[in-house]
Amino acid sequence: MVESLKSLLEGMPPFFIMSGLLAAGMLIWDTVEVGRNDATNLVNAVVGSGVLLRRAAVRVAGIGVVIGATASSQVVETARSGIFEPRGLSIEQAVAIYVAVYIVDTILLYGYSSFGMPISTTACLIFELLGASFAMGGFDVVYWGKASTVVSAIICSIFISGIAGFVIQRAVRNAVRDRGDDPAVLRVHGGWIGGGILTSLTYFMIVKGMPGLLKLVPILGAGKVWIHETPLRIAVFIFGMWTIYALIIHLLLKLWGERFARQLFPLLAIFGTVCMGFAFGQNDLANCASPGLSALHLIFHWNEDVSVGTGVPIHWFFLFICGLLLLVGMNTKNAARVIRAAVNTGSQGNTVRLYAPQWCINIARFLLQFRKPAPILAPVAIKAPTGKRSHYDATRACVILTVGGCVIATASSFGLPVSTTYVAFAAVFATGMADRVLQRGDADLKLARTVWVVFSWFASAAIAAVASCGVCLVVYHLGPAGILIGVGGNLLLRSYLRKRGDAQEERVREQARDRRHPEDFTEYDD
Image (cartoon, rainbow, N blue to C red; front, side, top):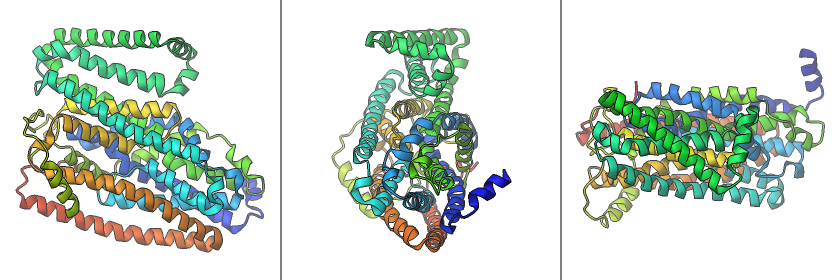
């Protein structure tokens, strides 16, 4: 192995050696950053509802993350070669693109995480690739059709998640109200609600989202083909699963009564967290793994045609390791900060701890003038069994996780790296609207934070494209010196943003205390 490495490095230009080292290091770095920010998409539902403490929720979600990451090859391939045509560039240009993407992506994700802002790593990747590839080859090397398909899928996923989240949450809330642990209510509604949740997660996660498993188990693959031959068979299959799950839940309610009734929705939320983790690992691994793996493949074939490097398959073991790195990022301080902010944005509590600029607050207050008085449907925030104050109940957590997981898994089955952040945020906001959480308390701050987050998403896309374009030109034209400049600038910005983020966090904490916030703000630091 040492001899083969020596032969590979023999005669290799310094630019490729430095790029290879940077690609390997930043693959690890960027994977941790993706886990650091997108942790909110997986666990804010169970943490906000008080079903699980943050660290326990991360461990539960981590099971799905690692499994999903190992099965994410199709999505990674889309991100590797679906946005631009590497064969239209030299190997130096292609490597410069991937290096620039990493330099920009790591600082962009870290900056947003420092301020507790959820950012779409998928959208960042797409626009970083577009900006850097445009810098190297102009309009001709970009797959504009594929890029527009991915962007359209992201936009559609937001609307689908929002509409589905609102409709399903309103239907479920009208059925159970605030009696989600009442045995009498659940004997009537628990079967169809729980059965529908389990059916959706089973169908979209296994049948739609795990093509690799279906290939490994031939009987499952054959069953999927048979089911999808006609729409009638699909309908019969879904209705049959729904009926079976509903009967099982009804039977368990009869056997264990109040004890099972108290645990029904929390158990469904935990199962949904695992499924959401699977969808996240399968989809978002493309955002962190594809640039580094692609750059390393190209560097290993630096003296050959660029098509050789892009045609090398990705081994499942590398995807598994990346899944573990995602889990590391989910356990960081900044991840807890993002979770806390996301939970407060969708909270049904009266007073929340959030930051939004004054212009967003002004917009929110203007919009809230048009709301009509209506009774809030969400129950009053109470202490959860974990001892923490819940920001929403387990019923709403189940809907959030089901909608988010199903939408993401469906997109992954088509090889489309949609935004986990956008989907999860849309589900949280839509279910909150269905529960009329903006009828009480800090409604202006919650809505202002939503406006600020959405605005920041558009800003991140523009920053990603422009910054990647500039960094790519510096790296390509200055070679090793350009790489050092890019990394140095990254580290300086990282230090600056960390200080600003910590200062804002403390300022928001003090403002919340001034408003006599009734909740313990250390609740998510466990």
